[in-house]
Image (cartoon, rainbow, N blue to C red; front, side, top):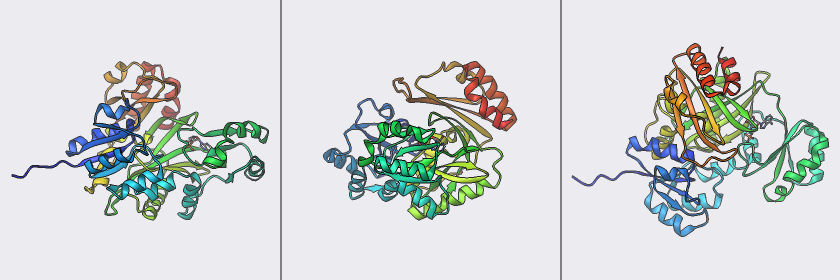
Length: 384
Ligand code: AMP
């Protein structure tokens, strides 16, 4: 019998997403190899880690020679690195899709071309542009860097035009480097995300829509399937499919949406597995992580249907006591093995139940045991 060779998935970025991808890859018989510039990158606890930065082409060449396909845990890998790697090994999603999702302007233009409206916005290159944009877009508004912003980073919220100087002070230096946009603040009814996956041969699937709550621009809780959204599921799925096909996208992505007056507005697209899809690990037949591994390796996709209802809490800054989660029925604890630091995502927990009523009861009980009643309140309200 000839020696069996296991497939190797190369992952750029060694954070919790890479860690969960590597864990999902294992039952498929797929090994992971991770690249990160930090020696303590948390994916390194579950997969071999190459410590190198994005311009260390000697290390990248050796990495490319060891893997069957390369994917991302981090979308801000420089475009040149992604293009360079694509000349040596299969890279999914393709570098051109990554480049669009790295730039808020290109992304918003693509959304509009695909029939998805966005909040009003204007590009800002100078302090004078900011005044002109405020006069056109109005206030409240958010000044955002076009590139390298995530989790509310690289953003300044302006309640009124009087805060223009403060906004420029905070972000003006980025204007020439990364570009800025001023975006109208949307008083949305709720935030939703579509987690979608497209295979190498064009099979496209979505998980049920997820409803999300953010605190200071960072995801705090998710609930899936999002209740009371009726025909929005179909519309959001069609938009996600249009985007995926336009980009020739392969792998999992998240489309983040605002619901305003019953209409969908596109906020952003993450070209990777996403925090609002973590519930799929225990709450769906196939998780976003497993389907991403399957998609990029050219394997058939798995069923994306939900098992009942799920809610996910993010642990930001520090971890609470694990015991209440470990003891609760159908609750699942995830510790990313990271050092605790203010604002850092260090873990999450997912709570599942067969239906909304039981989820509400279990959530109330668990939130009380954790002392997180305030965090859980909007989710409890949304389910009941
Ligand atoms: P982002 O990094 O652009 O996804 O922003 C993070 C979070 O900030 C979003 O999920 C929203 O909760 C909030 N946010 C961003 N842009 C807007 C906007 N134009 N109007 C209202 N809230 C926003």
